[in-house]
Amino acid sequence: MTIQEITTRKEDQTFDCKSIQIDPKALAITIVAFANADGGTIAIGVSDKTRKIEGVVQHTEKLNELLRVPLDFCNPSVPITSDLLPCTDKNGNDNHILLMHIPASSELHANQADEAYMRVGDKSRKLSFEERIQLMYDKGERYYEDTAVYGATVDDIDMVAVERYTELIGYTKSAKQYLQENNGFLTTNAKGEEQVSVACILLFGKYPQKFFPRGRTRFIRYKGTEERVGAEMNVIKDVTFEGTILDQVKATIAYLETQVEEHTFLGQHGQFVTNRDYPKFVIQEMVVNACCHRAYNIKGTEIQIKMLDDRLVFESPGRLPGTVKPTNIRHTHFSRNPKIAQFLKAYDFVKEFGEGVDRVCRELEANRSPIPTYHLDDFILKITVPKVIHRSITNGNATVNTKNATVNATTNSPKDTVNAQNATVNAENATVNSNDTIDRLIAKAAKQKDKLTANRISILRLMVENPYITKEEMASIIGLSGSTIMRNIEFMRGKYLRRVGSDKSGFWEIIE
Image 1 (cartoon, rainbow, N blue to C red):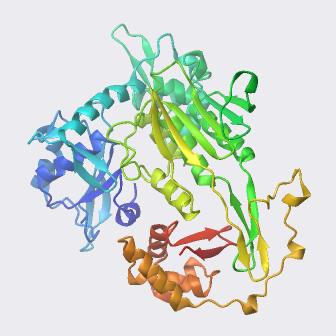
Image 2 (cartoon, rainbow, N blue to C red):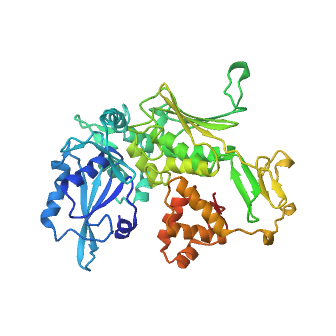
Image 3 (cartoon, rainbow, N blue to C red):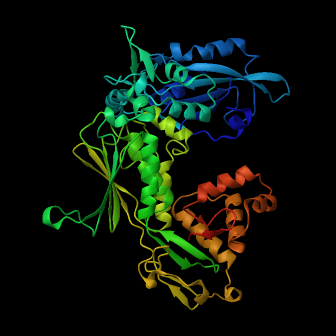
């Protein structure tokens, strides 16, 4: 982690900043919350309000006191690691920032007052008695990825795959040293025998299905809106993906992309726009969640992804983990398999812990589609994602029915092709009343009790007036940094605006 990352990164599920003046009891809350969730890093010596660098070298006694917090103020103690990062403080002097690295724990931790906390987004939330009991149960389940796989040896590990990962994360020692020194992937028992963990086999195994025959992903496509069996069986595709978790994630996403239909229409600015039955991010996030958070101790079934004419259903062994419920899933996160989650994050399949489901919901809402529903059937969690139903888009005298306008290189029907030569839009006759649009957006925000700051309104106004405006141009006009523009855009994405097309050739579209 660099100084720039520390001073610019938002506090989130796995990162927090604290002043050197923080009270040890307050620091214990954050440490406990990280340990009870996905782990994280605390940067001490940086103001969490102004992000000014205070440093720690001039506070030796205080620094030593804070280093004892994981031992003296947490029960049971939290086994952190720490290091000092050289920096220049706010006064221009050479200094250091203390980085505390807290691992996700298989135990439930509390503070001196016997209060348990859990990290939820950028906050440390106190758990109720019921939530605490539930978390204790799920932490026992979470421990499964650390258990030794009976009969597995070093010969079952694909060291080339380990090397690819260590190169990605910047680890410079050998592949075997990485396994021995990190995450308990490769340990030695009391008899001196090497043991390979469940997570190690699932992530780096030469053939994980040797030990986990149903540790695979199966895609089934049905004709119609019902699953039929026997003489009425309506299965038209049945494909199984095996290999490591990374292999399965990549192959499943790639195959699903071949099954998702795309629909093209003429947008409000004379550009052809392609919509999909299921947004790309929704497909990726749901596949990753299924592979990342399934209960691998349930060995009798695989992950099943079922595509029907009106919905996608993701069936994964295991219920919602930890304190996650259908009512809070958009903003609450708990990794059943934190080591697997951290691995997928390095490959950019997990963006930021705790943000994926909320973005899935926002993307579906932006398409005026219902959000996913969750149902537990015995020990199988079933998540249903409704198909996006596109409405007819009217632009001047030209109406294009997006349900019948499918762009496909191997289209089966001439009716499914949009002919760009026959579709014209008189852009000169298209006028947009910027003030009316902004007024409607402000009213929408007030109704949703959302916060549209002056900067966000300025960004929206510029997009209304010029849908092709770049982020750099907005930063120059408004007088903000590029990163500030991006943070505000991300806040509004899916609720007030969407990007249509690529970053280079696309344009902004306002969501009213």
